[in-house]
Amino acid sequence: MAALACATAQAVLPTSIGNNELRQFFSAPVPLFLLLSERTHDVLTQSSATVDTIVSECVRIKAQVVSADERESDLRRILNFGHTIGHALEAETRYSKFLHGEAVAVGMKAATHLAANTGLLSASDRDAILHTIGLYGPVPSVNGGVSADSLVARLVKDKKTIQGKVHFVLPDQIGHVRILSGLSEADVLAATRAALA
Image (cartoon, rainbow, N blue to C red; front, side, top):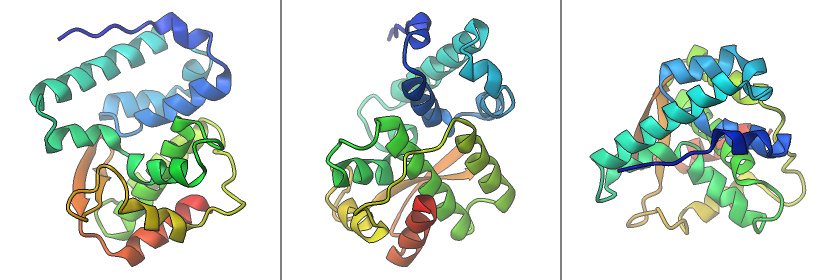
């Protein structure tokens, strides 16, 4: 397997796109999470050494996961932290209001709240994840017709919902996630409301 990444392409992207895509790395192993949380200035100014580290680590992680899950079973799902609610938000807004990374950031916030509210994630790790997401800029407001109820209703229509079961990628600590289904609708609604607040 080979992967090609052009680190210099990131330097020419508008800041909103660059920051929005950076948010997707927050389920990364601890060293990468620490880089994102402690060296924000280097990340946002796109220091070449920092970008090289992020790109090479992300390629390594994705290659490792995909190689271990060539037939797309459950393991590959760990790459989708934040995507369950994020995809619902994109669909609810007809793919016109949010960039993908922005919608996933809302989804990561919801997944983080859900993990903490169900006792899977400590309050300190929840706070660290939410703080780090916030370091990369505010997510556009979801005011105007988007409710937690409408997002949760969309979850059963998602292409990754299997036999009516919605699967969530939830952090149980920084740098590690678990895939869970069968969570109560009340818990999912509360977490989604918290993410939208």
